[in-house]
Image (cartoon, rainbow, N blue to C red):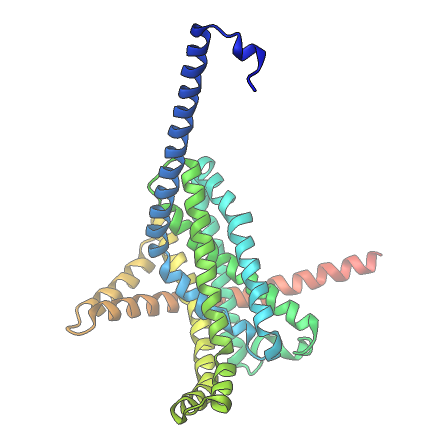
Length: 337
Protein backbone atom coordinates (compact mmCIF):
# COMPACT_ATOMS: atom_id res chain seq x y z
CA UNK A 1 0.00 0.00 0.00
CA UNK A 2 1.41 3.34 -1.06
CA UNK A 3 1.01 6.36 1.20
CA UNK A 4 -1.00 9.33 -0.06
CA UNK A 5 1.96 11.71 0.20
CA UNK A 6 4.17 9.43 -1.85
CA UNK A 7 1.43 8.75 -4.39
CA UNK A 8 0.76 12.45 -4.86
CA UNK A 9 4.47 13.36 -5.25
CA UNK A 10 5.34 15.00 -8.54
CA UNK A 11 7.88 13.37 -10.92
CA UNK A 12 10.42 16.05 -9.98
CA UNK A 13 9.99 15.39 -6.26
CA UNK A 14 10.23 11.64 -6.84
CA UNK A 15 13.44 12.20 -8.77
CA UNK A 16 14.86 14.26 -5.89
CA UNK A 17 13.88 11.52 -3.42
CA UNK A 18 15.55 8.83 -5.53
CA UNK A 19 18.67 10.95 -5.99
CA UNK A 20 18.84 11.65 -2.24
CA UNK A 21 18.42 7.97 -1.43
CA UNK A 22 21.19 7.03 -3.87
CA UNK A 23 23.44 9.73 -2.36
CA UNK A 24 22.73 8.40 1.14
CA UNK A 25 23.52 4.84 0.07
CA UNK A 26 26.71 6.08 -1.58
CA UNK A 27 27.72 7.88 1.63
CA UNK A 28 27.05 4.72 3.63
CA UNK A 29 29.14 2.74 1.16
CA UNK A 30 32.03 5.24 1.49
CA UNK A 31 31.81 5.09 5.31
CA UNK A 32 31.74 1.29 5.27
CA UNK A 33 34.75 1.16 2.96
CA UNK A 34 36.61 3.63 5.18
CA UNK A 35 35.75 1.58 8.27
CA UNK A 36 36.90 -1.62 6.55
CA UNK A 37 40.13 0.09 5.47
CA UNK A 38 40.64 1.37 9.00
CA UNK A 39 40.13 -2.12 10.47
CA UNK A 40 42.43 -3.61 7.82
CA UNK A 41 45.03 -0.92 8.60
CA UNK A 42 44.66 -1.60 12.31
CA UNK A 43 45.17 -5.34 11.77
CA UNK A 44 48.33 -4.69 9.76
CA UNK A 45 49.64 -2.17 12.28
CA UNK A 46 48.89 -4.49 15.21
CA UNK A 47 50.79 -7.34 13.52
CA UNK A 48 53.87 -5.12 13.07
CA UNK A 49 53.59 -3.73 16.60
CA UNK A 50 53.08 -7.19 18.07
CA UNK A 51 56.18 -8.52 16.35
CA UNK A 52 58.30 -5.68 17.75
CA UNK A 53 56.95 -6.25 21.27
CA UNK A 54 57.46 -10.03 21.10
CA UNK A 55 60.60 -9.96 23.25
CA UNK A 56 58.77 -8.45 26.22
CA UNK A 57 55.86 -10.86 25.65
CA UNK A 58 58.22 -13.83 25.98
CA UNK A 59 59.57 -12.33 29.21
CA UNK A 60 55.97 -11.92 30.45
CA UNK A 61 55.27 -15.59 29.69
CA UNK A 62 58.41 -16.59 31.61
CA UNK A 63 57.59 -14.44 34.65
CA UNK A 64 53.95 -15.51 35.19
CA UNK A 65 54.30 -19.26 36.02
CA UNK A 66 56.34 -18.33 39.09
CA UNK A 67 53.24 -16.75 40.63
CA UNK A 68 51.30 -20.03 40.33
CA UNK A 69 54.06 -22.27 41.71
CA UNK A 70 53.31 -23.89 45.06
CA UNK A 71 49.55 -23.31 44.92
CA UNK A 72 46.75 -25.89 44.97
CA UNK A 73 46.76 -27.60 41.53
CA UNK A 74 42.95 -27.34 41.43
CA UNK A 75 43.26 -23.56 41.65
CA UNK A 76 45.96 -23.15 38.98
CA UNK A 77 43.68 -22.46 35.99
CA UNK A 78 41.31 -20.15 37.94
CA UNK A 79 44.35 -18.21 39.17
CA UNK A 80 45.79 -17.94 35.65
CA UNK A 81 42.34 -16.75 34.52
CA UNK A 82 42.27 -14.06 37.23
CA UNK A 83 45.74 -12.86 36.26
CA UNK A 84 44.77 -12.84 32.57
CA UNK A 85 41.68 -10.73 33.29
CA UNK A 86 43.82 -8.38 35.38
CA UNK A 87 46.33 -8.17 32.52
CA UNK A 88 43.56 -7.39 30.03
CA UNK A 89 42.23 -4.70 32.37
CA UNK A 90 45.75 -3.26 32.71
CA UNK A 91 46.12 -3.02 28.93
CA UNK A 92 42.65 -1.90 27.81
CA UNK A 93 41.28 0.12 30.73
CA UNK A 94 44.42 1.83 32.05
CA UNK A 95 47.35 1.65 29.64
CA UNK A 96 45.63 2.09 26.28
CA UNK A 97 43.94 5.43 27.08
CA UNK A 98 46.99 6.55 29.08
CA UNK A 99 49.33 5.76 26.17
CA UNK A 100 47.15 7.64 23.67
CA UNK A 101 46.78 10.62 26.01
CA UNK A 102 50.49 10.81 26.75
CA UNK A 103 51.35 10.43 23.07
CA UNK A 104 49.00 13.32 22.23
CA UNK A 105 49.51 15.71 25.13
CA UNK A 106 52.65 14.81 27.11
CA UNK A 107 55.04 12.65 25.08
CA UNK A 108 57.89 13.89 27.31
CA UNK A 109 56.36 11.96 30.26
CA UNK A 110 56.51 8.52 28.62
CA UNK A 111 60.21 7.90 29.23
CA UNK A 112 60.28 8.87 32.94
CA UNK A 113 57.22 6.71 33.64
CA UNK A 114 58.77 3.77 31.82
CA UNK A 115 61.98 4.23 33.82
CA UNK A 116 60.04 4.21 37.09
CA UNK A 117 58.49 0.95 35.96
CA UNK A 118 61.96 -0.35 35.10
CA UNK A 119 63.19 0.45 38.62
CA UNK A 120 60.19 -1.43 40.03
CA UNK A 121 60.96 -4.52 37.92
CA UNK A 122 64.61 -4.42 38.99
CA UNK A 123 63.53 -4.06 42.62
CA UNK A 124 61.11 -7.02 42.37
CA UNK A 125 63.72 -9.24 40.76
CA UNK A 126 66.58 -8.20 43.06
CA UNK A 127 64.40 -8.69 46.14
CA UNK A 128 63.79 -12.30 45.09
CA UNK A 129 67.52 -12.84 44.46
CA UNK A 130 68.49 -11.32 47.81
CA UNK A 131 65.75 -13.30 49.57
CA UNK A 132 67.01 -16.58 48.12
CA UNK A 133 70.60 -15.77 48.98
CA UNK A 134 69.57 -15.03 52.57
CA UNK A 135 67.36 -18.15 52.71
CA UNK A 136 64.09 -16.22 52.91
CA UNK A 137 62.55 -16.16 49.46
CA UNK A 138 59.86 -13.48 49.22
CA UNK A 139 59.40 -13.21 52.98
CA UNK A 140 57.61 -16.57 53.24
CA UNK A 141 57.62 -16.76 57.03
CA UNK A 142 55.26 -13.76 57.08
CA UNK A 143 53.10 -15.01 54.19
CA UNK A 144 49.63 -16.52 54.71
CA UNK A 145 49.15 -20.28 54.40
CA UNK A 146 49.57 -21.41 50.76
CA UNK A 147 46.09 -22.97 50.72
CA UNK A 148 44.35 -19.87 52.05
CA UNK A 149 42.34 -17.41 49.93
CA UNK A 150 44.54 -14.60 51.31
CA UNK A 151 47.68 -16.21 49.87
CA UNK A 152 46.00 -16.70 46.49
CA UNK A 153 44.82 -13.09 46.50
CA UNK A 154 48.35 -11.93 47.39
CA UNK A 155 49.87 -13.93 44.52
CA UNK A 156 47.31 -12.70 41.98
CA UNK A 157 47.79 -9.07 43.06
CA UNK A 158 51.59 -9.41 42.78
CA UNK A 159 51.30 -10.98 39.33
CA UNK A 160 48.99 -8.22 38.10
CA UNK A 161 51.34 -5.51 39.44
CA UNK A 162 54.30 -7.06 37.63
CA UNK A 163 52.18 -7.54 34.50
CA UNK A 164 51.28 -3.83 34.58
CA UNK A 165 54.92 -2.84 34.05
CA UNK A 166 55.53 -5.46 31.37
CA UNK A 167 52.24 -4.52 29.67
CA UNK A 168 53.22 -0.85 29.76
CA UNK A 169 56.43 -1.75 27.93
CA UNK A 170 54.47 -3.84 25.39
CA UNK A 171 51.94 -1.06 24.75
CA UNK A 172 54.65 1.62 24.49
CA UNK A 173 56.67 -0.42 21.98
CA UNK A 174 53.46 -1.15 20.07
CA UNK A 175 52.43 2.51 19.98
CA UNK A 176 55.87 3.57 18.77
CA UNK A 177 55.60 0.98 15.97
CA UNK A 178 52.20 2.14 14.71
CA UNK A 179 52.64 4.48 11.77
CA UNK A 180 49.01 5.61 11.51
CA UNK A 181 48.37 9.03 13.04
CA UNK A 182 44.60 8.55 13.21
CA UNK A 183 43.77 8.13 16.90
CA UNK A 184 41.01 5.58 16.22
CA UNK A 185 43.34 3.38 14.18
CA UNK A 186 45.96 3.69 16.92
CA UNK A 187 43.40 2.76 19.58
CA UNK A 188 42.08 -0.22 17.61
CA UNK A 189 45.61 -1.42 16.83
CA UNK A 190 46.67 -1.17 20.49
CA UNK A 191 43.49 -2.96 21.61
CA UNK A 192 44.18 -5.80 19.17
CA UNK A 193 47.79 -6.04 20.36
CA UNK A 194 46.65 -6.10 23.99
CA UNK A 195 43.99 -8.77 23.46
CA UNK A 196 46.11 -11.05 21.25
CA UNK A 197 49.18 -10.77 23.47
CA UNK A 198 47.15 -11.55 26.59
CA UNK A 199 45.55 -14.60 24.96
CA UNK A 200 48.94 -15.79 23.73
CA UNK A 201 50.81 -15.29 27.01
CA UNK A 202 48.20 -16.70 29.38
CA UNK A 203 47.19 -19.49 27.02
CA UNK A 204 50.83 -20.62 27.03
CA UNK A 205 51.01 -20.24 30.82
CA UNK A 206 47.84 -22.33 31.26
CA UNK A 207 49.32 -25.10 29.09
CA UNK A 208 52.55 -25.01 31.10
CA UNK A 209 50.98 -25.22 34.53
CA UNK A 210 48.64 -28.07 33.54
CA UNK A 211 51.19 -30.06 31.52
CA UNK A 212 51.96 -32.30 34.51
CA UNK A 213 48.25 -33.16 34.87
CA UNK A 214 48.12 -33.99 31.18
CA UNK A 215 51.20 -36.18 31.61
CA UNK A 216 49.64 -37.95 34.60
CA UNK A 217 46.45 -38.65 32.64
CA UNK A 218 48.51 -40.00 29.74
CA UNK A 219 50.65 -42.16 32.03
CA UNK A 220 47.51 -43.72 33.53
CA UNK A 221 45.15 -43.87 30.58
CA UNK A 222 47.08 -43.90 27.29
CA UNK A 223 46.30 -46.95 25.14
CA UNK A 224 49.86 -47.43 23.92
CA UNK A 225 53.12 -47.95 25.76
CA UNK A 226 54.66 -45.00 23.92
CA UNK A 227 51.85 -42.70 25.09
CA UNK A 228 52.27 -43.84 28.70
CA UNK A 229 56.04 -43.28 28.44
CA UNK A 230 55.49 -39.74 27.13
CA UNK A 231 53.11 -39.10 30.02
CA UNK A 232 55.61 -40.33 32.61
CA UNK A 233 58.30 -38.21 30.98
CA UNK A 234 56.09 -35.11 31.24
CA UNK A 235 55.39 -35.79 34.92
CA UNK A 236 59.12 -36.15 35.65
CA UNK A 237 60.19 -33.15 33.56
CA UNK A 238 57.60 -30.54 34.55
CA UNK A 239 58.98 -29.78 38.06
CA UNK A 240 62.38 -29.12 36.51
CA UNK A 241 60.85 -27.01 33.71
CA UNK A 242 58.82 -24.96 36.21
CA UNK A 243 61.92 -24.46 38.40
CA UNK A 244 63.89 -23.28 35.38
CA UNK A 245 61.04 -20.97 34.38
CA UNK A 246 61.03 -19.55 37.90
CA UNK A 247 64.70 -18.62 37.56
CA UNK A 248 64.18 -17.30 34.01
CA UNK A 249 61.19 -15.27 35.21
CA UNK A 250 63.23 -13.53 37.91
CA UNK A 251 66.06 -12.95 35.43
CA UNK A 252 63.56 -11.59 32.89
CA UNK A 253 62.26 -9.00 35.36
CA UNK A 254 65.83 -7.86 36.00
CA UNK A 255 67.02 -7.73 32.38
CA UNK A 256 63.82 -6.10 31.08
CA UNK A 257 64.01 -3.51 33.87
CA UNK A 258 67.71 -2.96 33.21
CA UNK A 259 67.06 -2.59 29.48
CA UNK A 260 64.34 0.00 30.11
CA UNK A 261 66.72 1.96 32.33
CA UNK A 262 69.72 1.86 29.96
CA UNK A 263 67.54 3.02 27.05
CA UNK A 264 65.98 5.72 29.21
CA UNK A 265 69.34 7.00 30.43
CA UNK A 266 70.61 7.10 26.84
CA UNK A 267 67.52 9.12 25.93
CA UNK A 268 68.65 11.73 28.49
CA UNK A 269 72.27 11.72 27.32
CA UNK A 270 73.76 9.28 29.86
CA UNK A 271 75.24 6.92 27.29
CA UNK A 272 77.68 4.78 29.31
CA UNK A 273 75.29 2.00 30.47
CA UNK A 274 73.79 1.57 27.00
CA UNK A 275 77.25 1.73 25.40
CA UNK A 276 78.39 -1.11 27.68
CA UNK A 277 75.35 -3.18 26.73
CA UNK A 278 75.95 -2.50 23.03
CA UNK A 279 79.63 -3.44 23.38
CA UNK A 280 78.78 -6.82 24.93
CA UNK A 281 76.10 -7.44 22.30
CA UNK A 282 78.56 -6.45 19.55
CA UNK A 283 81.12 -8.90 20.90
CA UNK A 284 78.54 -11.69 20.66
CA UNK A 285 77.56 -10.60 17.15
CA UNK A 286 81.14 -11.17 15.97
CA UNK A 287 81.10 -14.86 16.87
CA UNK A 288 81.24 -17.16 13.83
CA UNK A 289 78.37 -19.39 15.05
CA UNK A 290 74.91 -18.33 16.33
CA UNK A 291 75.95 -14.69 16.30
CA UNK A 292 72.38 -13.33 16.56
CA UNK A 293 71.62 -15.49 19.61
CA UNK A 294 74.96 -14.57 21.19
CA UNK A 295 74.30 -10.87 20.60
CA UNK A 296 70.86 -11.15 22.24
CA UNK A 297 72.26 -13.14 25.16
CA UNK A 298 75.07 -10.61 25.64
CA UNK A 299 72.63 -7.70 25.57
CA UNK A 300 70.30 -9.43 28.06
CA UNK A 301 73.19 -10.35 30.37
CA UNK A 302 74.64 -6.83 30.37
CA UNK A 303 71.20 -5.29 30.92
CA UNK A 304 70.64 -7.83 33.70
CA UNK A 305 73.88 -6.90 35.49
CA UNK A 306 72.92 -3.23 35.39
CA UNK A 307 69.35 -4.06 36.45
CA UNK A 308 70.61 -6.17 39.37
CA UNK A 309 72.82 -3.31 40.58
CA UNK A 310 69.92 -0.85 40.41
CA UNK A 311 67.52 -3.36 41.96
CA UNK A 312 69.86 -4.18 44.83
CA UNK A 313 70.28 -0.48 45.56
CA UNK A 314 66.48 -0.09 45.48
CA UNK A 315 66.10 -3.03 47.92
CA UNK A 316 68.61 -1.44 50.31
CA UNK A 317 66.85 1.94 50.12
CA UNK A 318 63.40 0.35 50.56
CA UNK A 319 64.33 -1.89 53.49
CA UNK A 320 66.72 0.38 55.37
CA UNK A 321 65.47 3.82 54.37
CA UNK A 322 61.84 3.98 53.25
CA UNK A 323 60.65 1.03 55.37
CA UNK A 324 61.84 2.36 58.75
CA UNK A 325 60.50 5.82 57.92
CA UNK A 326 57.06 4.39 57.09
CA UNK A 327 57.03 2.32 60.29
CA UNK A 328 58.03 5.42 62.27
CA UNK A 329 55.25 7.44 60.62
CA UNK A 330 52.67 4.71 61.34
CA UNK A 331 53.85 4.52 64.95
CA UNK A 332 53.52 8.28 65.35
CA UNK A 333 50.01 8.19 63.84
CA UNK A 334 48.91 5.35 66.16
CA UNK A 335 50.26 7.18 69.23
CA UNK A 336 48.45 10.35 68.24
CA UNK A 337 45.17 8.45 68.12
